[in-house]
Length: 406
Ligand SMILES: Cc1ncc(COP(=O)(O)O)c(C=O)c1O
Image (tube, rainbow, N blue to C red):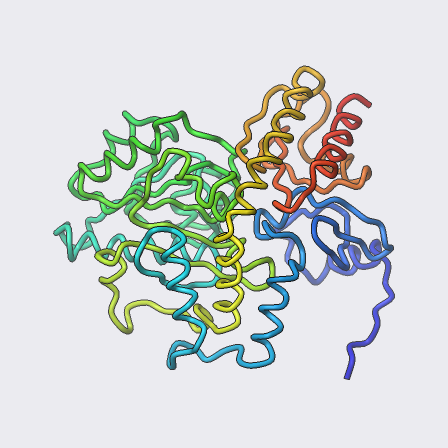
């Protein structure tokens, strides 16, 4: 049986959502109906260049043919077993992901927030069992301006009042220090510290890139202090910055790596905690789990994603196209752009507030056929699929110039 054909317009569909869909998002008024590569199409057939890529969940483009084929193949054989049984896709997924990252073991989960939650649990248990922190005294040091997800424990250490307000009581055990401040970090770490948890580049904060040497400092400090370095690469990882991982720009390897978003190829939610064996090895049966984590469909897609990254092609492309993006943005400084930060195909662009808020700029770009999203205030974030061509990138930059100088 085929699904009935729906004929409602974009405007009707937006209106229909209002009374029945929770208002926890404020989407741009575009109703996407299909997509291919870097392009999406709305209900009326208008085409838009996707410069957001599902917050980096679509690094390999919409409906990447290799990933779609892997998903189809798996859909036709086996989709879910639960971890009550083994499945024939999981070994390869874990082996290949461990090899790609240079770590030893994988804990498969589904969403980014679940990977963060899982890492918090693993770090605490590691602190009690290996480091010898007294029961219930473990602390985790995090950074101001962080974004690690939306669960109650994760918003407990958020510094964004909109994300926190009204959701207490909060989970204790976290210390917040300024980002990119080695001295503050060092002062916050003590014998109770299980881990330092940071984003190597803060995405939601506006693509904030720490000073050269900061990540090396975090690595050295955590090693010296005998605590774990957990890098949340859920948004920065898997090719986005021109390398497989953002930490590679300083040549450091964390003890625990959190991946998500692009790991599911834009098809299914797939996340993972990837870590050294002496860290993840502390989990025993029954102590942690997920009905869907490591399901064969997710594992098949995840393995195919790793396969794409093994070629190095996407990382190279992100670096090359990243130079086009950086040069294009540099040329707009003083023409409505007051500053920007970029690494690979990822940029936070601060627009002159006199021209408009990030939201207003995003809406004007949407009318020019370019989809972006604001982060805070007058900052917009650009993160197109890594498959974008130089020509497409230049057309997006041209539209931005038009909007800024209109
Ligand atoms: C760095 C980082 N960590 C965690 C998350 C949460 O991921 P999810 O929305 O899949 O729970 C995000 C999402 O934007 C993120 O950017």
